[in-house]
Structures are given as structure tokens and as C-alpha cells.
Length: 149
Ligand SMILES: [Zn+2]
Ligand SMILES: [Zn+2]
Ligand SMILES: [Zn+2]
Image 1 (tube, rainbow, N blue to C red):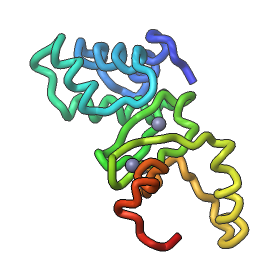
Image 2: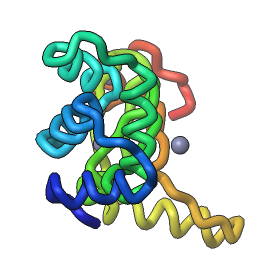
Image 3: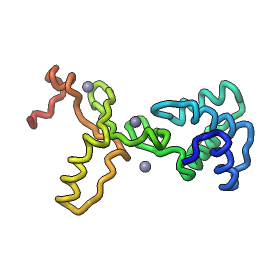
Image 4: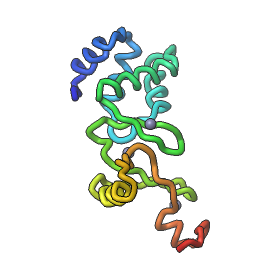
């Protein structure tokens, strides 16, 4: 996957997207970002430089960057977020009580995927959406516990 600015811009042009100043600014934000990339934060940062930018331009450009393999998306309760493809190989855990987020590495998630595969022949992609539950700290407070353990 191409991750230089020139390479990413060339890949977008190859998909028929014109490289407007707005799209170039979006590409620059995405390449500078580390960790989670939310469409809203990209919009806010690009809008600070180019006040006329439309949110739909942000969404369409992020989708095109996913189609070129630069980004992958994941679903958390606040909506879809993106990662640079190389940084997306983990599972999100979200606490329903405090809203805290943790991650499980791909290695840690592998035994869970193996259980699902054995039981149903189903190849689960646990990185695609967050696992919802109760974090250790909230559990230790004893609030909101479901009582099932
Ligand atoms: Zn993540
Ligand atoms: Zn999805
Ligand atoms: Zn919590």
C-alpha cells in the first residue's frame, strides 16, 4: 500500500478523482494522523484551513482512500472511524458504562476467532466493529453489572 503523499494522490487520480485543494488537504491530514481518524476531526482540521469544505467531500475522499487500501474502517458507538491500514489490526473494546475504549491485539483476538470458526465455520473479522461490554474498573465498582458472572 502506497503511503507517500505522491503515491496516494496518484492512486486517487487513477480512480478518477480530481485533486482539488480540499482533497489534497484531506490527504495531508490522513497521512499525518496516527491512531484513530474520525471523519469529524478530519473535517474540523481541514475546515480550519479551507472554510468552504463540505463534509460530503471528506466522506467521499475517506471512502476513496479506503478503496485504494490506504485506510480501513471500524465501527465504534460514535460512528465509523478509520485507521491507516497498517495500524488497523486490533479489536476495540468499548465500555457501555464509562465509554472507555481499550484495544485487544490481533494476537489476543485470534483464539476468539478460532472458537467461532470451529463452532460455525464462520471466519469472524473482530476488527470490524467494537465489542461492547463493561470494563474492569466499572465491573469492580459493581455498578451496571449484568449479574451473569
Ligand atoms: Zn483502533
Ligand atoms: Zn463497516
Ligand atoms: Zn468502564
